Amino acid sequence: MKNARHVLRLAAILVVGVTSFIVVRRLLVPATFGEIGHYRAAAIEQIKSKPVRHAGADACVDCHSDVSDLKSTSKHAGIHCESCHGPGAAHAEDPDSADARPTRHLAQPRRLFCGACHSESISRPPFMRQVHLEIHYPKQPCTDCHQSHHPEVEK
Ligand code: HEC
Ligand code: HEC
Ligand code: HEC
Ligand code: HEC
Image 1 (cartoon, rainbow, N blue to C red):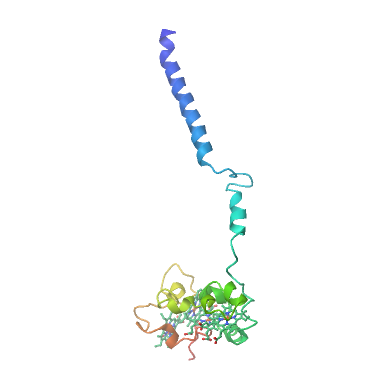
Image 2: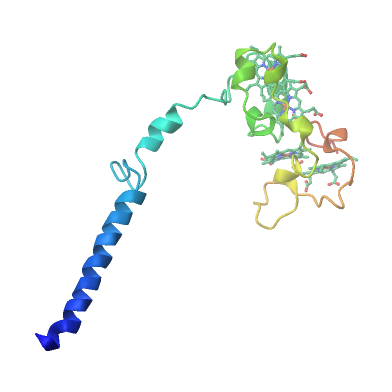
């Protein structure tokens, strides 16, 4: 027995280690984790309970057919209204409310708004036309020359 003491000590450390791992894991892993997949199942209900903020691609057309007609013949045809204007569900429900107007674009300078998609970057696909913001008419708002809903320059 005298010669086995070091083995017992090792076994004791192992037992303490495994037990504390199980206890800590139980404390840290959320209750519904793993019920459906490798994530917290309760997250689905939590996300479902949030109010819907986007109205969807078709919702804007009823009232703004002039804009959608213009846009549908342009290079921006594939870009949805809310990609640029931000979530519009509250505005579509109550168009008269000034608070709900989707005017996010108006607060964005050229680099952050048009430049978010068009500033030169080798990581962008080539079909997404790119300009160098420091060279391409700097300091002037993009919309002075490009109509947002039909941005092509007539040549
Ligand atoms: C039920 C009709 C209706 C729907 C649906 C609707 N709008 Fe509007 N929208 C309006 C009206 C009315 C105005 C105010 C026009 C004005 O004051 O000249 C407006 C104004 C706007 C403006 C201009 C805001 C400003 O301050 O100049 C934008 C941008 C806009 N809508 C975008 C959208 C988008 C994007 C959608 C879809 C998510 C949408 N609208 C859906 C009726 C609607
Ligand atoms: C590429 C970004 C972009 C997309 C996509 C876009 N808009 Fe706009 N929209 C703008 C900007 C920027 C303005 C500000 C006016 C300007 O200076 O061109 C604007 C202005 C407006 C206005 C104010 C009146 C006007 O015609 O200038 C309305 C209404 C509007 N947009 C509705 C829509 C609707 C509806 C859609 C979808 C069919 C849409 N927009 C798609 C960027 C966009
Ligand atoms: C959400 C991304 C996005 C935003 C924001 C956006 N664009 Fe675009 N734009 C595109 C894509 C994608 C194309 C190319 C579509 C194609 O060629 O099929 C395009 C096409 C264009 C073109 C046409 C280039 C040509 O081939 O003639 C111009 C000009 C342009 N955009 C200017 C603007 C301006 C100005 C703004 C800001 C008001 C803007 N864009 C905002 C994605 C965006
Ligand atoms: C002073 C007017 C003016 C301003 C301001 C301006 N552009 Fe242009 N843009 C043009 C002209 C003209 C062309 C076509 C000739 C060329 O490529 O220079 C063009 C072309 C483009 C193209 C197509 C490039 C290609 O390779 O086919 C894109 C994308 C574009 N502009 C985006 C923007 C963006 C984004 C802004 C704001 C950051 C902006 N433009 C500001 C006049 C302007």
